[in-house]
Amino acid sequence: MEFKLKQLSNSLQVTKIANVHFFEFEESKQTQKDKHPFCELLFSYSGVLKIEGDNFKGKLKKDEMIIHGANELHSLATHKNKKTTIVILGFECNSPLLKFFSENKIRLDEREKKQIARIIKEGRNVFAPPYDKVLYDMKKKENQIFGSEQLLRSLLEIFLIELIRKHVLAKHEEYDGEVKRFDEVITYVDAHFMEKITLDELAFLFSTNRSAFCKDFKAHTGQTFVNYVAIKKTDKIKELLIKSDKSIAEISSQLGFESSAYFCRFFKKQTDLTPKEYRKQYK
Image 1 (tube, rainbow, N blue to C red):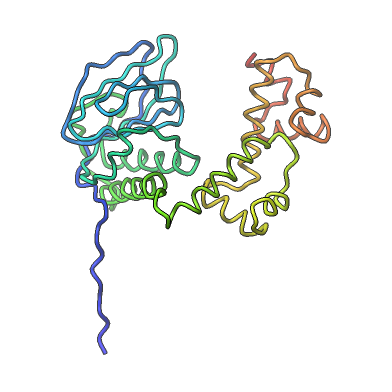
Image 2: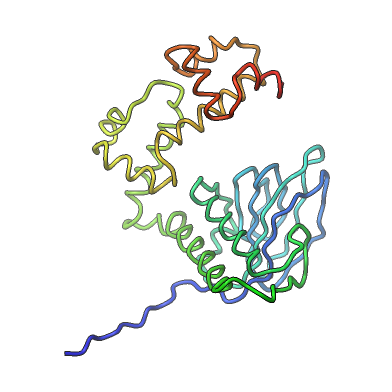
């Protein structure tokens, strides 16, 4: 008996790539309004961009992304007192589902930011420098690593497909339940990370078990629950050390640490600096 092979269809296809940029815009930078016959992804790695487009007008803050559609007139401006680091990806793709991202900015989670980083790295295997200037004709490298162009296209396609599933198709019943449920989990953790919350407690609150919760958490965020909370706590500690005059003991207590000694060990493990050293260096 002969096996029957099945043709696989393409729900979305990136046919061409114009540029792959990662660079820093100067303060008070204002670009001229422009349009081109391909999509343009803008991601703010740091700082704030003011976007003026046919389908979206507003600010693009750190970790936020938008995709201008083909032939959409647009421009951008940076903050008058702060430099802004951004990713720009120009690509050809005719999927109508991408229109959502030209009308709505989205915030990327840690997993999605890692996907963007991998696209940028693979882009540098395909294209020759410079990478920090807007070029109308990026040159391909003569000696590319095997499969670089195909992998770059595939990584971008996977990234876009997963964004569509999450933000566009989530409106459909087949995706709605899971996405909304995990949005509730993240909202709860973000609101209570300074308190003592355990995996058992979270599993109980969200009607699952410890093992399934950990697996789902990593699948949706790209990191373990412990690492996620550690990053949130570390960022909050840095903020309090720089922006407040609270003592080490007060900050330790506010973030739910059992002792100041454990608090200091935790912070040094995350940053290689003690809280006092960090405050002295950055305040």
